[in-house]
Length: 456
Image (cartoon, rainbow, N blue to C red; front, side, top):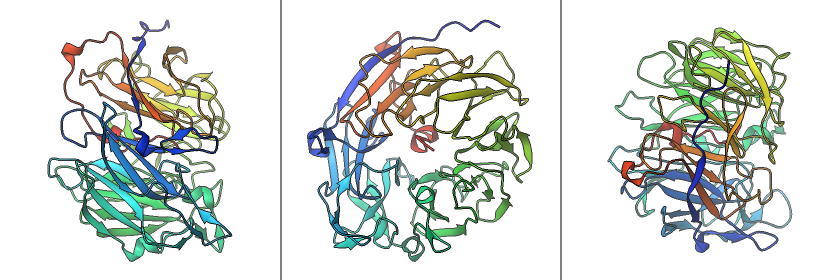
């Protein structure tokens, strides 16, 4: 079958410089921003940005918010914070986070305005370890001002660390992401969950611990998903947690505990057929709400499922398709149909870490989706169909340009691509042509933005 009509070319809608006060020089003197999140912090209908830095690359200690125009909104913490390293000589410095970390933007308390939900290190600590959370607390910050609305340091959080069975498991520990969820059947999500090493903690908007689960799978490559996924698997109006080798109900009750094979790195909760399903990169698997397999491609087809995404990538076919980076940190991607048929294999562009897949509704919600991989858009036939003009080369480090936020920034029903290199100092927003400002409306902030996958 021939390719569908080519999608719109990418136009650079705007380049937003990170305010200099929110950057730090790297070893060569180049200004670096750090990790990034997006949201409408001021409530004016336009997207805003939040950049943050972390002590030792793990513990957030500085956050700076700025507008689409590049104007600073507020800052919290100390971008030059240091502390003695409890695990060795010298001091830990504030740097760009090792991975996208525990910071999220959403209206967590449902007051009609967005908040910043984040971990923060105790600013008075003199000596700390990167490998435990004994001196970290959770904070809810006012999105407009950065003022602390609520904070807590529960004992369950303080006990979390990178160790299991007397050994340190760094890959299992460093992916600390706050995922907004609805465990309590509110009209809108007011809870969140985070995986910290082998511990999974769920909280409500009062920062109270709802439940605590300890995973059995922490040893590479038999680890559970680095970043869990949340969504309503059983249709009861409350979210479940897909951790790959484990599934948890809204109250933390175990739905399944099954070793599914090596490299269950990336997971989703997404629609598969007529129902929601748990999707797992390792072995290319789709599970129902009780953990029973609906699809299993196997290790011969998917030897190392690094990333998996789900979207309407082939609109001429029924259902949705999987895009799997199936060969580890390489540029090899496959598209898999609803019936488990591998439609095609192709290579995306090489990038520093060969991660960063994302589904983009470039032509609007009624058209076929495209697949982002740094730094281009591909259709479901594996053809590169859009590149991004004026985007610089990655500045160094393995995460360059993998930050892709698909978001309807302009409010015209089509998703823009918001790109950011954590080792750079500017945000690039690309829109599909033609650019028609008369169609622009408000930015919409939803689960695809506040729970952006970013990397696995």
